[in-house]
Amino acid sequence: MIKLFSLKQKKDEESAGGNRTGAGGKKASAAQLRIQKDINELNLPKTCEINFPDDDDLLNFRLIISPDEVGQGYPHDPPKVKCETMVYHPNIDLEGNVCLNILREDWKPVLTINSIIYGLQYLFLEPNPEDPLNKEAAEVLQTNRRLFEQNVHRTLRGGYIGSTYFERCLK
Image (cartoon, rainbow, N blue to C red):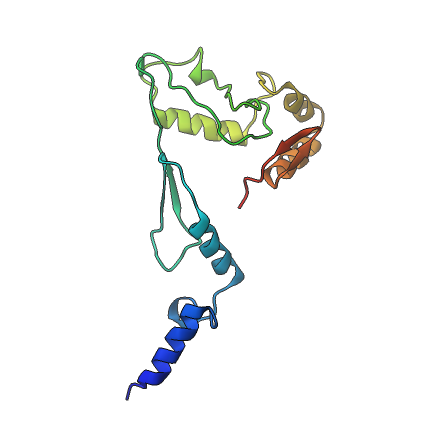
């Protein structure tokens, strides 16, 4: 026999946040509560899309970033790429300009947007201090890699390097 009063009471508690249960009636973890809050506050630009393959697993998602506009000369001219989040990186200046060879002298019309994305990903994994836009970050990377890594972590969490404040970009 279904106890309608118990079901209604449980539903009322859940909607009021009293029980805070996740899928399957289990208590939601701190991570699940936080990700739900972050998703509710998410304000993605029109060039970004977020997909959840499993609606019950909000901790695993795909973020899709599409170019906003491609210049009229594309593919003969490289697209314009700018980092909108200020980052501490030898190859990205504080205005977001990116120094990547395939966006300049090594551009060829056979290169694709996919090539640029992989190039950017590689640039984040392996910064190039030999061709810097942010000379200070490049110098620190060359002279003291550990300090460079500490500076990167500090800026990602929101903090100062010298007199420059970097907004938190880690969620």
